[in-house]
Length: 427
Ligand code: GAL
Image (cartoon, rainbow, N blue to C red; front, side):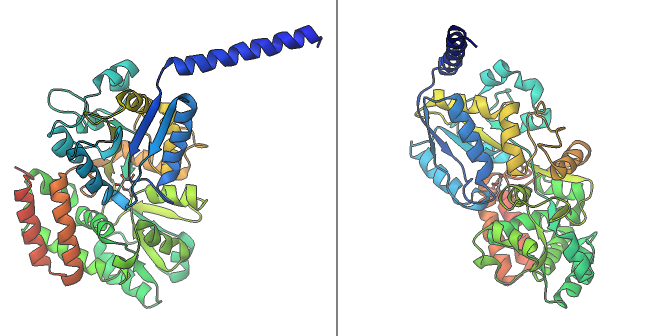
Protein backbone atom coordinates (compact mmCIF):
# COMPACT_ATOMS: atom_id res chain seq x y z
CA UNK A 1 0.00 0.00 0.00
CA UNK A 2 1.34 3.46 -0.92
CA UNK A 3 2.00 5.97 1.83
CA UNK A 4 -0.95 8.15 0.81
CA UNK A 5 -3.29 5.18 0.73
CA UNK A 6 -2.12 4.14 4.16
CA UNK A 7 -2.78 7.62 5.46
CA UNK A 8 -6.22 7.57 3.94
CA UNK A 9 -7.05 4.23 5.57
CA UNK A 10 -5.81 5.58 8.89
CA UNK A 11 -7.85 8.73 8.50
CA UNK A 12 -10.99 6.79 7.63
CA UNK A 13 -10.42 4.55 10.67
CA UNK A 14 -9.94 7.62 12.86
CA UNK A 15 -13.06 9.32 11.56
CA UNK A 16 -15.01 6.12 12.12
CA UNK A 17 -13.66 5.77 15.64
CA UNK A 18 -14.51 9.41 16.38
CA UNK A 19 -17.95 8.79 14.96
CA UNK A 20 -18.46 5.88 17.34
CA UNK A 21 -17.20 7.90 20.28
CA UNK A 22 -19.42 10.84 19.43
CA UNK A 23 -22.36 8.49 18.99
CA UNK A 24 -21.78 7.09 22.43
CA UNK A 25 -21.20 10.42 24.08
CA UNK A 26 -24.17 11.77 22.12
CA UNK A 27 -26.16 9.94 24.75
CA UNK A 28 -24.67 12.77 26.76
CA UNK A 29 -24.77 11.06 30.12
CA UNK A 30 -22.08 11.91 32.59
CA UNK A 31 -21.48 12.11 36.32
CA UNK A 32 -21.99 9.52 39.05
CA UNK A 33 -24.28 6.53 39.06
CA UNK A 34 -24.74 4.81 42.40
CA UNK A 35 -26.01 1.24 42.00
CA UNK A 36 -27.44 -0.51 45.01
CA UNK A 37 -27.67 -4.32 45.17
CA UNK A 38 -26.66 -7.34 47.26
CA UNK A 39 -24.52 -8.82 44.54
CA UNK A 40 -21.04 -9.05 45.93
CA UNK A 41 -18.60 -11.91 46.43
CA UNK A 42 -18.35 -15.25 44.70
CA UNK A 43 -21.52 -16.66 43.23
CA UNK A 44 -23.17 -13.25 43.19
CA UNK A 45 -21.00 -10.60 41.54
CA UNK A 46 -19.77 -11.99 38.21
CA UNK A 47 -22.87 -11.07 36.19
CA UNK A 48 -23.20 -7.61 37.69
CA UNK A 49 -19.49 -6.88 37.21
CA UNK A 50 -19.73 -7.83 33.52
CA UNK A 51 -22.74 -5.56 33.13
CA UNK A 52 -20.89 -2.65 34.68
CA UNK A 53 -17.88 -3.16 32.39
CA UNK A 54 -20.09 -3.03 29.29
CA UNK A 55 -22.13 -0.12 30.60
CA UNK A 56 -18.95 1.89 31.23
CA UNK A 57 -17.73 1.15 27.71
CA UNK A 58 -21.00 2.50 26.32
CA UNK A 59 -21.15 5.44 28.73
CA UNK A 60 -17.57 6.54 29.29
CA UNK A 61 -18.72 9.74 30.95
CA UNK A 62 -20.45 7.92 33.80
CA UNK A 63 -18.68 7.07 37.01
CA UNK A 64 -20.30 3.91 38.39
CA UNK A 65 -20.32 3.62 42.16
CA UNK A 66 -21.10 0.02 43.05
CA UNK A 67 -22.71 0.11 46.51
CA UNK A 68 -23.36 -3.61 46.83
CA UNK A 69 -23.94 -4.88 50.36
CA UNK A 70 -23.17 -8.54 51.04
CA UNK A 71 -25.78 -10.89 52.45
CA UNK A 72 -27.68 -13.46 50.41
CA UNK A 73 -31.25 -12.67 49.37
CA UNK A 74 -30.62 -9.09 50.40
CA UNK A 75 -31.25 -9.64 54.11
CA UNK A 76 -28.85 -6.85 55.06
CA UNK A 77 -29.03 -4.72 51.92
CA UNK A 78 -32.80 -4.33 52.12
CA UNK A 79 -32.60 -2.91 55.65
CA UNK A 80 -29.88 -0.46 54.61
CA UNK A 81 -31.90 0.53 51.55
CA UNK A 82 -35.00 1.23 53.65
CA UNK A 83 -33.02 3.43 56.02
CA UNK A 84 -31.56 5.37 53.10
CA UNK A 85 -34.81 5.71 51.19
CA UNK A 86 -36.74 6.89 54.22
CA UNK A 87 -33.89 9.17 55.24
CA UNK A 88 -33.97 11.01 51.90
CA UNK A 89 -30.69 9.51 50.73
CA UNK A 90 -31.69 7.17 47.89
CA UNK A 91 -29.16 5.55 45.53
CA UNK A 92 -29.61 6.14 41.79
CA UNK A 93 -30.95 2.67 41.01
CA UNK A 94 -31.62 -0.26 43.30
CA UNK A 95 -32.13 -4.02 43.06
CA UNK A 96 -35.60 -5.16 44.05
CA UNK A 97 -37.62 -8.31 43.38
CA UNK A 98 -40.59 -8.23 41.04
CA UNK A 99 -43.87 -8.67 42.90
CA UNK A 100 -44.89 -7.80 46.44
CA UNK A 101 -41.40 -6.69 47.49
CA UNK A 102 -41.59 -3.84 44.97
CA UNK A 103 -45.29 -3.11 45.12
CA UNK A 104 -46.21 -3.41 48.77
CA UNK A 105 -43.47 -1.08 49.86
CA UNK A 106 -41.86 1.18 47.28
CA UNK A 107 -44.77 1.58 44.87
CA UNK A 108 -47.28 1.88 47.70
CA UNK A 109 -45.16 4.54 49.40
CA UNK A 110 -44.78 6.45 46.12
CA UNK A 111 -40.99 6.21 46.31
CA UNK A 112 -40.23 4.94 42.79
CA UNK A 113 -40.60 6.51 39.36
CA UNK A 114 -42.79 4.97 36.67
CA UNK A 115 -40.69 3.86 33.69
CA UNK A 116 -43.31 3.48 30.95
CA UNK A 117 -41.42 5.85 28.65
CA UNK A 118 -38.43 3.46 28.64
CA UNK A 119 -40.71 0.53 27.88
CA UNK A 120 -42.37 2.38 25.04
CA UNK A 121 -39.15 3.71 23.54
CA UNK A 122 -37.58 0.23 23.56
CA UNK A 123 -40.63 -1.80 22.54
CA UNK A 124 -40.31 -3.70 25.84
CA UNK A 125 -44.07 -4.10 26.28
CA UNK A 126 -43.83 -6.73 23.55
CA UNK A 127 -40.49 -8.13 24.71
CA UNK A 128 -41.27 -8.97 28.34
CA UNK A 129 -43.71 -11.72 29.39
CA UNK A 130 -47.11 -10.32 30.36
CA UNK A 131 -47.12 -12.15 33.68
CA UNK A 132 -43.81 -10.56 34.62
CA UNK A 133 -44.99 -7.09 33.58
CA UNK A 134 -48.02 -7.47 35.79
CA UNK A 135 -45.72 -8.16 38.78
CA UNK A 136 -44.03 -4.77 38.32
CA UNK A 137 -47.06 -2.66 37.38
CA UNK A 138 -49.81 -0.96 39.34
CA UNK A 139 -53.50 -1.14 38.42
CA UNK A 140 -53.25 2.03 36.35
CA UNK A 141 -50.61 0.40 34.16
CA UNK A 142 -47.57 2.26 35.47
CA UNK A 143 -44.45 0.07 35.30
CA UNK A 144 -41.97 0.57 38.11
CA UNK A 145 -38.84 -1.45 37.42
CA UNK A 146 -36.78 -3.21 34.77
CA UNK A 147 -36.32 -7.00 35.18
CA UNK A 148 -32.90 -8.43 34.34
CA UNK A 149 -33.67 -12.11 34.85
CA UNK A 150 -35.86 -15.00 35.89
CA UNK A 151 -34.47 -17.18 38.67
CA UNK A 152 -35.85 -20.48 39.91
CA UNK A 153 -36.16 -21.15 43.63
CA UNK A 154 -37.24 -24.83 43.80
CA UNK A 155 -34.07 -26.56 42.65
CA UNK A 156 -32.20 -29.39 44.33
CA UNK A 157 -28.49 -29.69 43.48
CA UNK A 158 -26.38 -32.85 43.64
CA UNK A 159 -23.39 -34.60 42.10
CA UNK A 160 -24.48 -37.71 40.13
CA UNK A 161 -21.27 -39.71 40.65
CA UNK A 162 -21.49 -39.14 44.40
CA UNK A 163 -25.08 -40.36 44.63
CA UNK A 164 -23.98 -43.46 42.78
CA UNK A 165 -21.05 -43.96 45.13
CA UNK A 166 -23.36 -43.64 48.15
CA UNK A 167 -26.01 -45.88 46.57
CA UNK A 168 -28.84 -43.37 46.75
CA UNK A 169 -31.14 -41.88 44.12
CA UNK A 170 -32.89 -38.58 43.84
CA UNK A 171 -35.93 -38.73 46.18
CA UNK A 172 -39.28 -38.14 44.46
CA UNK A 173 -40.92 -36.76 47.59
CA UNK A 174 -39.93 -35.34 50.97
CA UNK A 175 -41.45 -38.41 52.54
CA UNK A 176 -39.03 -40.60 50.59
CA UNK A 177 -36.21 -38.26 51.54
CA UNK A 178 -36.82 -38.38 55.30
CA UNK A 179 -37.72 -42.07 55.53
CA UNK A 180 -35.25 -43.62 53.05
CA UNK A 181 -32.64 -41.28 51.57
CA UNK A 182 -31.72 -39.45 54.75
CA UNK A 183 -31.05 -42.51 56.96
CA UNK A 184 -29.11 -44.21 54.14
CA UNK A 185 -26.80 -41.20 53.84
CA UNK A 186 -26.46 -40.71 57.59
CA UNK A 187 -25.34 -44.33 57.85
CA UNK A 188 -22.47 -43.39 55.53
CA UNK A 189 -21.62 -40.24 57.49
CA UNK A 190 -22.78 -38.01 54.67
CA UNK A 191 -24.88 -34.92 55.43
CA UNK A 192 -28.15 -35.65 53.59
CA UNK A 193 -29.02 -32.01 52.94
CA UNK A 194 -26.83 -28.95 53.45
CA UNK A 195 -28.19 -25.73 54.88
CA UNK A 196 -26.88 -22.30 55.76
CA UNK A 197 -28.18 -19.39 57.88
CA UNK A 198 -31.81 -18.45 58.52
CA UNK A 199 -32.72 -17.09 55.08
CA UNK A 200 -31.50 -20.29 53.40
CA UNK A 201 -33.73 -22.21 55.81
CA UNK A 202 -36.71 -20.13 54.73
CA UNK A 203 -35.65 -20.82 51.14
CA UNK A 204 -35.85 -24.54 51.86
CA UNK A 205 -39.16 -24.07 53.68
CA UNK A 206 -40.93 -22.74 50.58
CA UNK A 207 -39.77 -25.69 48.49
CA UNK A 208 -40.84 -28.19 51.14
CA UNK A 209 -44.23 -26.51 51.50
CA UNK A 210 -44.75 -26.38 47.74
CA UNK A 211 -43.89 -30.08 47.56
CA UNK A 212 -46.25 -30.93 50.41
CA UNK A 213 -49.23 -28.64 49.70
CA UNK A 214 -49.04 -28.63 45.91
CA UNK A 215 -49.62 -25.61 43.70
CA UNK A 216 -53.10 -24.70 44.94
CA UNK A 217 -52.24 -25.23 48.58
CA UNK A 218 -49.06 -23.17 48.25
CA UNK A 219 -50.76 -20.36 46.32
CA UNK A 220 -53.56 -20.46 48.87
CA UNK A 221 -51.17 -19.33 51.58
CA UNK A 222 -50.78 -16.04 49.72
CA UNK A 223 -54.31 -15.55 48.42
CA UNK A 224 -56.22 -16.49 51.55
CA UNK A 225 -57.43 -19.91 50.39
CA UNK A 226 -55.15 -22.03 52.60
CA UNK A 227 -55.50 -21.96 56.36
CA UNK A 228 -52.07 -21.22 57.78
CA UNK A 229 -52.90 -23.02 61.00
CA UNK A 230 -54.91 -25.83 59.41
CA UNK A 231 -53.99 -29.50 59.43
CA UNK A 232 -52.20 -29.53 56.09
CA UNK A 233 -50.09 -26.48 56.84
CA UNK A 234 -49.21 -27.96 60.21
CA UNK A 235 -48.21 -31.25 58.59
CA UNK A 236 -45.98 -29.34 56.17
CA UNK A 237 -44.19 -27.68 59.11
CA UNK A 238 -43.77 -31.10 60.58
CA UNK A 239 -42.20 -32.44 57.38
CA UNK A 240 -39.98 -29.36 57.19
CA UNK A 241 -38.81 -30.17 60.74
CA UNK A 242 -37.93 -33.71 59.70
CA UNK A 243 -35.96 -32.36 56.76
CA UNK A 244 -34.10 -29.98 59.09
CA UNK A 245 -33.15 -32.99 61.21
CA UNK A 246 -31.32 -34.33 58.13
CA UNK A 247 -29.23 -31.17 57.72
CA UNK A 248 -25.83 -30.12 59.04
CA UNK A 249 -26.22 -29.00 62.64
CA UNK A 250 -23.90 -26.04 62.18
CA UNK A 251 -26.23 -24.44 59.61
CA UNK A 252 -26.48 -21.13 61.48
CA UNK A 253 -22.71 -20.83 61.63
CA UNK A 254 -22.28 -20.97 57.85
CA UNK A 255 -21.55 -17.53 56.41
CA UNK A 256 -24.16 -17.62 53.65
CA UNK A 257 -25.59 -19.89 50.93
CA UNK A 258 -22.29 -20.56 49.13
CA UNK A 259 -20.68 -22.76 51.83
CA UNK A 260 -23.85 -24.89 51.92
CA UNK A 261 -23.89 -25.33 48.13
CA UNK A 262 -20.15 -25.97 48.25
CA UNK A 263 -20.68 -28.94 50.60
CA UNK A 264 -22.42 -30.76 47.74
CA UNK A 265 -19.55 -30.08 45.37
CA UNK A 266 -17.03 -31.15 48.03
CA UNK A 267 -18.89 -34.41 48.59
CA UNK A 268 -19.64 -33.77 52.26
CA UNK A 269 -23.38 -33.35 51.61
CA UNK A 270 -25.67 -35.09 49.14
CA UNK A 271 -28.27 -32.42 48.39
CA UNK A 272 -28.77 -28.67 48.63
CA UNK A 273 -31.95 -26.78 47.84
CA UNK A 274 -31.00 -23.37 46.53
CA UNK A 275 -32.02 -20.99 43.77
CA UNK A 276 -30.22 -21.23 40.47
CA UNK A 277 -27.72 -18.53 41.38
CA UNK A 278 -26.03 -21.73 42.58
CA UNK A 279 -25.70 -22.66 38.89
CA UNK A 280 -24.02 -19.28 38.35
CA UNK A 281 -21.63 -20.07 41.18
CA UNK A 282 -20.84 -23.56 39.88
CA UNK A 283 -20.43 -22.43 36.27
CA UNK A 284 -18.88 -18.96 36.48
CA UNK A 285 -16.95 -19.15 39.76
CA UNK A 286 -16.03 -22.83 40.03
CA UNK A 287 -15.87 -23.62 36.27
CA UNK A 288 -17.90 -26.81 36.73
CA UNK A 289 -19.53 -28.76 33.93
CA UNK A 290 -23.34 -29.13 34.11
CA UNK A 291 -24.59 -32.72 34.18
CA UNK A 292 -21.06 -33.91 34.96
CA UNK A 293 -19.69 -32.04 37.97
CA UNK A 294 -23.14 -31.10 39.21
CA UNK A 295 -26.75 -31.86 38.37
CA UNK A 296 -30.17 -30.55 39.38
CA UNK A 297 -33.85 -31.36 39.56
CA UNK A 298 -37.03 -29.70 40.77
CA UNK A 299 -37.05 -30.07 44.58
CA UNK A 300 -38.92 -33.20 45.74
CA UNK A 301 -42.64 -33.19 44.95
CA UNK A 302 -42.45 -30.13 42.67
CA UNK A 303 -41.96 -31.73 39.26
CA UNK A 304 -43.75 -29.60 36.66
CA UNK A 305 -43.74 -26.49 38.84
CA UNK A 306 -41.37 -23.55 38.43
CA UNK A 307 -41.15 -21.33 41.51
CA UNK A 308 -39.99 -18.06 40.03
CA UNK A 309 -38.51 -14.79 41.16
CA UNK A 310 -37.12 -11.91 39.18
CA UNK A 311 -34.37 -9.43 39.98
CA UNK A 312 -35.22 -5.97 38.75
CA UNK A 313 -33.83 -2.45 39.04
CA UNK A 314 -35.96 0.51 40.10
CA UNK A 315 -35.42 4.28 40.00
CA UNK A 316 -36.10 6.00 43.32
CA UNK A 317 -37.88 9.33 43.38
CA UNK A 318 -35.29 11.93 44.26
CA UNK A 319 -32.37 9.87 42.90
CA UNK A 320 -29.40 12.25 42.68
CA UNK A 321 -28.51 11.23 39.10
CA UNK A 322 -31.74 10.21 37.36
CA UNK A 323 -30.31 10.58 33.86
CA UNK A 324 -27.46 8.16 34.54
CA UNK A 325 -29.95 5.84 36.28
CA UNK A 326 -32.17 5.88 33.19
CA UNK A 327 -29.18 5.09 31.00
CA UNK A 328 -28.46 2.10 33.26
CA UNK A 329 -32.08 0.90 33.15
CA UNK A 330 -32.17 1.37 29.40
CA UNK A 331 -29.07 -0.78 29.15
CA UNK A 332 -29.94 -3.60 31.56
CA UNK A 333 -33.35 -4.12 29.98
CA UNK A 334 -31.84 -4.78 26.56
CA UNK A 335 -31.43 -8.28 25.16
CA UNK A 336 -27.70 -7.61 24.66
CA UNK A 337 -27.15 -6.77 28.34
CA UNK A 338 -29.19 -9.75 29.48
CA UNK A 339 -27.08 -12.06 27.33
CA UNK A 340 -24.01 -10.75 29.15
CA UNK A 341 -25.51 -11.01 32.61
CA UNK A 342 -27.54 -14.21 32.75
CA UNK A 343 -25.05 -16.86 31.58
CA UNK A 344 -22.89 -15.74 34.53
CA UNK A 345 -25.76 -15.32 36.98
CA UNK A 346 -27.39 -18.72 36.48
CA UNK A 347 -30.70 -17.15 35.48
CA UNK A 348 -32.81 -16.89 32.34
CA UNK A 349 -33.06 -13.60 30.48
CA UNK A 350 -36.33 -11.79 31.24
CA UNK A 351 -36.29 -10.06 27.86
CA UNK A 352 -37.71 -12.65 25.45
CA UNK A 353 -35.67 -11.33 22.51
CA UNK A 354 -32.43 -12.40 24.22
CA UNK A 355 -30.45 -15.26 22.67
CA UNK A 356 -31.58 -18.09 24.98
CA UNK A 357 -31.59 -20.55 22.06
CA UNK A 358 -27.82 -20.11 21.77
CA UNK A 359 -26.47 -23.19 23.55
CA UNK A 360 -22.91 -21.83 23.42
CA UNK A 361 -23.99 -18.93 25.57
CA UNK A 362 -26.62 -20.72 27.63
CA UNK A 363 -25.44 -24.23 28.51
CA UNK A 364 -27.39 -27.35 29.45
CA UNK A 365 -28.53 -25.92 32.77
CA UNK A 366 -30.16 -22.91 31.12
CA UNK A 367 -31.70 -25.00 28.37
CA UNK A 368 -33.39 -27.24 30.92
CA UNK A 369 -34.52 -24.26 33.04
CA UNK A 370 -35.91 -22.57 29.93
CA UNK A 371 -37.82 -25.68 28.94
CA UNK A 372 -39.38 -25.76 32.41
CA UNK A 373 -40.03 -22.00 32.51
CA UNK A 374 -41.95 -22.19 29.25
CA UNK A 375 -43.92 -25.37 29.99
CA UNK A 376 -44.37 -25.66 33.77
CA UNK A 377 -46.95 -24.22 36.13
CA UNK A 378 -45.49 -20.99 37.51
CA UNK A 379 -45.73 -19.99 41.16
CA UNK A 380 -44.00 -17.10 42.96
CA UNK A 381 -41.28 -17.32 45.60
CA UNK A 382 -42.02 -15.96 49.07
CA UNK A 383 -38.40 -15.83 50.13
CA UNK A 384 -37.47 -13.74 47.12
CA UNK A 385 -40.22 -11.17 47.14
CA UNK A 386 -42.69 -12.38 44.53
CA UNK A 387 -45.75 -13.17 46.64
CA UNK A 388 -45.48 -11.67 50.12
CA UNK A 389 -44.74 -8.14 51.33
CA UNK A 390 -41.50 -7.16 53.04
CA UNK A 391 -43.34 -6.84 56.36
CA UNK A 392 -44.30 -10.53 56.24
CA UNK A 393 -40.81 -11.52 55.23
CA UNK A 394 -38.98 -9.98 58.18
CA UNK A 395 -41.46 -11.46 60.67
CA UNK A 396 -41.30 -14.82 58.92
CA UNK A 397 -37.51 -14.98 59.21
CA UNK A 398 -37.99 -14.76 63.00
CA UNK A 399 -40.47 -17.64 62.89
CA UNK A 400 -38.07 -19.74 60.81
CA UNK A 401 -35.24 -18.96 63.19
CA UNK A 402 -37.37 -19.80 66.24
CA UNK A 403 -38.45 -23.08 64.61
CA UNK A 404 -34.84 -23.97 63.90
CA UNK A 405 -34.19 -23.95 67.62
CA UNK A 406 -37.45 -25.27 69.13
CA UNK A 407 -38.93 -27.36 66.22
CA UNK A 408 -42.39 -26.46 67.52
CA UNK A 409 -44.65 -26.87 64.48
CA UNK A 410 -47.82 -25.79 66.30
CA UNK A 411 -46.34 -22.44 67.40
CA UNK A 412 -44.73 -21.87 64.00
CA UNK A 413 -48.00 -22.49 62.15
CA UNK A 414 -49.97 -20.28 64.54
CA UNK A 415 -47.41 -17.46 64.48
CA UNK A 416 -47.17 -17.56 60.69
CA UNK A 417 -50.98 -17.42 60.46
CA UNK A 418 -51.11 -14.41 62.76
CA UNK A 419 -48.32 -12.72 60.83
CA UNK A 420 -50.17 -13.28 57.56
CA UNK A 421 -53.23 -11.51 59.00
CA UNK A 422 -51.15 -8.68 60.42
CA UNK A 423 -49.37 -8.06 57.13
CA UNK A 424 -52.53 -8.19 55.02
CA UNK A 425 -51.85 -11.48 53.24
CA UNK A 426 -54.85 -13.05 51.57
CA UNK A 427 -57.22 -10.29 52.52
C1 GAL B 1 -31.95 -13.58 45.62
C2 GAL B 1 -31.62 -12.84 44.36
C3 GAL B 1 -30.61 -13.59 43.58
C4 GAL B 1 -29.41 -13.96 44.43
C5 GAL B 1 -29.86 -14.60 45.74
C6 GAL B 1 -28.77 -14.93 46.70
O1 GAL B 1 -32.86 -12.87 46.40
O2 GAL B 1 -32.80 -12.68 43.64
O3 GAL B 1 -30.22 -12.84 42.46
O4 GAL B 1 -28.63 -12.86 44.62
O5 GAL B 1 -30.79 -13.79 46.37
O6 GAL B 1 -28.25 -13.81 47.29
